[in-house]
Image (cartoon, rainbow over all chains, first blue to last red; front, side, top):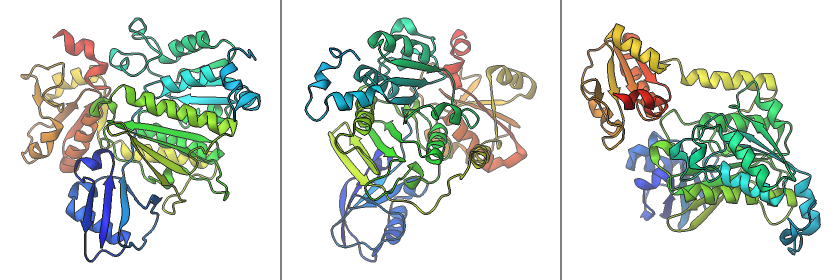
Length: 77
Length: 368
């Protein structure tokens, strides 16, 4: 499956904007596993996924060419 | 209402007298008179919001001035709320400015926010942000969330129902607060002064849109803004299913207190006097966890220098001292280091973190 990954804040320092071609990833839970294995720093951080600009609250299937965003919390003021 | 003052808004198509009257009859509480708070307050004041409350317990320091544009060099060490209120009253004497020179906590938050139609969160820490979120969610008080990090910002409106009758809050995006030190703040991460100016101005615009009923405010929408490439990304917030909000004020106080106890108590935060005492009595090991480029440079015969970026490697060694005092610029990274040491040594060692850091006690550290 081909996915576009965009990320923000600190996460964008180690996960750059990219197109990925991944096999064996059919849903957002599997994608989280894939991301946290490929980028171990992510596993220690709070973040939320959005698929095609919709926040993911529970496991959801992915389809070819979905755009996945990885959003961390910001606290600065 | 002085029509000349607001004449450019009164002639504005799609705004006019009806919208301006809504602004005059509204009240907004701005929490945090910092990088976000300053432009928020300035534009709300200028626009003619009838009542504006300001909450902040801090004083003005030199490192604030590059982004907190209500303040001047002559205002150093003055309370932010007092100086901000004076300036805003000069800007627009027709409106009412209420001063709340305090830090919101579980005991005072309801009595303050109840008086306002809208709350704007421009604070600089997760403790305050979750406290404000939970209290506003409980009261279903409209909350405008604004936050910055590095060159990026976030903005959203919570507790306002969309056309489907759905309202969301911050916990729908991030149900659990990050651990202390997990996310860097402005002091550690740095911030380009103009960024909170942009995000704060956008937050003021959202408040005006929401009150006046114009345009499409960011209800159930998180806006992400990147200053470096001028891009915006919005995501639709849906209701989460992995958190519980308090159902009553009593429930709220219990829950928030439990949350903060959960974070603390494993190590102790101390002030300068305690640090000096411990150093004499206990032969405590003093560790400065700042990066090597940071000022002031401390006496390396007294303070062992272990930057946070090297802390994990340092943890591989065994530390002999029974007591360890950690310090950094503002006392935030030192808390993260204290937690790491606590994980390794449990109660076998006494771990301390200098609260407020070198910045708070700078007179002591600069005199040498």
